[in-house]
Image 1 (cartoon, rainbow, N blue to C red):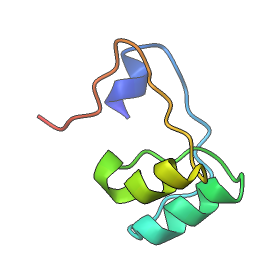
Image 2 (cartoon, rainbow, N blue to C red):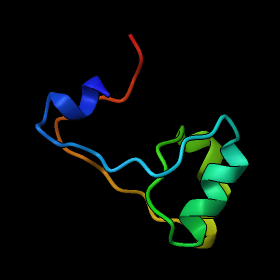
Image 3 (cartoon, helix red, strand yellow):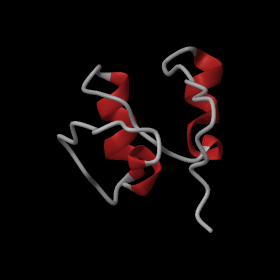
Length: 63
């Protein structure tokens, strides 16, 4: 991903999915970090099942 290349990070990608539910459940069960729009995970953030990580100087928005 270009986002990671710009900040010199090589992610160890162990899972990719088109299913938001699969990614959310993977993160909830400590399988890794999921990068998803906040609106998809808001209830999980509010319940404390997921934590939000703010990454400085990184823009995940598609342009």
